[in-house]
Image 1: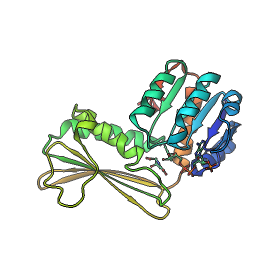
Image 2: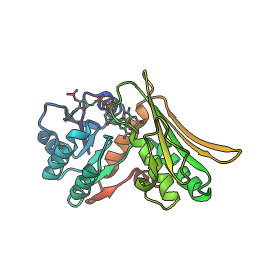
Image 3: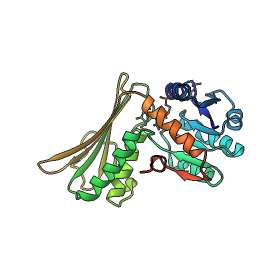
Image 4: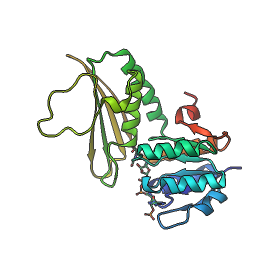
Length: 242
Ligand SMILES: NC(=O)C1=CN([C@@H]2O[C@H](COP(=O)(O)OP(=O)(O)OC[C@H]3O[C@@H](n4cnc5c(N)ncnc54)[C@H](OP(=O)(O)O)[C@@H]3O)[C@@H](O)[C@H]2O)C=CC1
Ligand SMILES: O=C(O)C1=N[C@H](C(=O)O)C[C@H](O)C1
């Protein structure tokens, strides 16, 4: 039977995951937080989930790799250096990284990719996200994931078309760009709106998270699935069979 260890166990997501483990009868192998050594839980667990801090990710990957324990990474705010470290670790252990573990968002990304592929570059794509006042990173990991999906639909690298810093006299919108906007406030769990703005008409594809349990349930499902996979880098699409 798999047991799950949590990096970020005392946080909002860590607590939500422990609730799901208890309700689904999955064994909890323990957790580690900011001042803890990440190694013991990596050895104790059959699979790890990381919902902590981007600054801790590399140490968590080292601990997981040393113990030979698969790891689901839900932490956001990742840089190119973090992604390179994930690729390295995935040579030896199974690693699943995603900006969002909910079924709804994974399906939304599929729909966004499809819409972007079918609508021409004269349909402007804008991604709006709203989160609680405590969130540290922007745009959210989910917004970037949706941006990647839209860029993939248009067969362009997101880095070449991404615009996330409009302010002041920023000029007219360049065709083919993908814009990002963020708001932060109160206890908003996580809203994402993908707008395809054409001339005289508009399509909007939205996901509104109402409870962190959706992320926690998806993270546990992903962890139980990942525990059985060989070394490699995986996404939620594979877990959900999409
Ligand atoms: N992929 C997804 O579906 C989702 C991803 N997230 C992401 O998960 C992350 C955590 O979110 P949330 O739970 O709301 O955040 P919280 O701030 O509530 O919790 C963060 C947790 O991480 C711990 N932590 C901080 N630094 C370290 C460190 N160096 N080593 C180990 N643990 C550390 C904190 O420990 P301490 O209390 O000791 O400081 C705390 O327990 C964020 O990046 C967020 O964007 C969130 C929801 C869904
Ligand atoms: O920090 C959060 O809360 C969330 N973070 C993830 C993100 O950055 O997209 C997922 C979800 O939206 C909640």
